Length: 237
Image 1 (cartoon, rainbow, N blue to C red):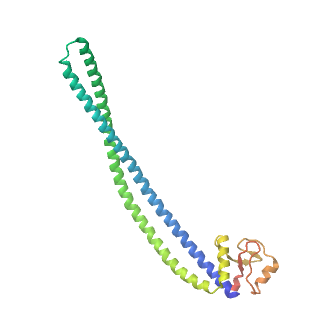
Image 2 (cartoon, helix red, strand yellow):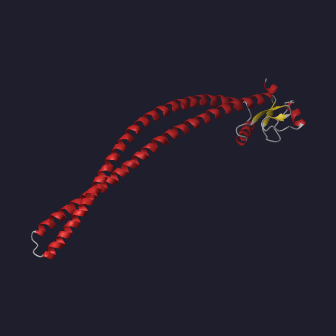
Image 3 (cartoon, rainbow, N blue to C red):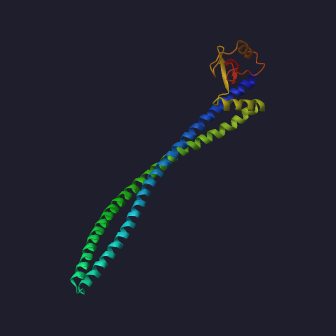
């Protein structure tokens, strides 16, 4: 039984080390995902401005087409004035020309507004492209550093898993299964020390008989409160 306790404590020590490496790896992966999200956010912001620019350019083209149509209308109306013979018709056409010129002036103003905003957006997009390029370089470097750490953690874990398998082979399959089930239920801690009559896993007092039975090393003793496997420190030496 002493050998089993030694192996169980060693198995847990290795599992906790592996857990720590996996947690560190997960943190690094989350940091890398956050960096990717930062890039995605910057690209999305640039994309929004590019969409706004495309929409403005389309509006500008439509306004320019309307402007060209109004200019043609004014030209035709001016030509008609030379052929008009009645005062009433002359006034009507003149009114049409005046309205068309007013609309043309409004369209010209709208075109100028679009041009001004288009220039602003192009400048903003250029700045965003420069910022995004610098951000991507920085993120690539940071992700590279984290990937090196992840690779090292994987390398260490691969070695630990091999060693863990060796330790687990020294225990019966049922004991390992029981241990792993406890680890899953007890936040990774299945084997704990008993000291001064208490379980150090749940900090509850152990029944005197349970505590005394641990010294006999006849069987694997578990805490009646948390069901963790118990050992006494001097039993591992």
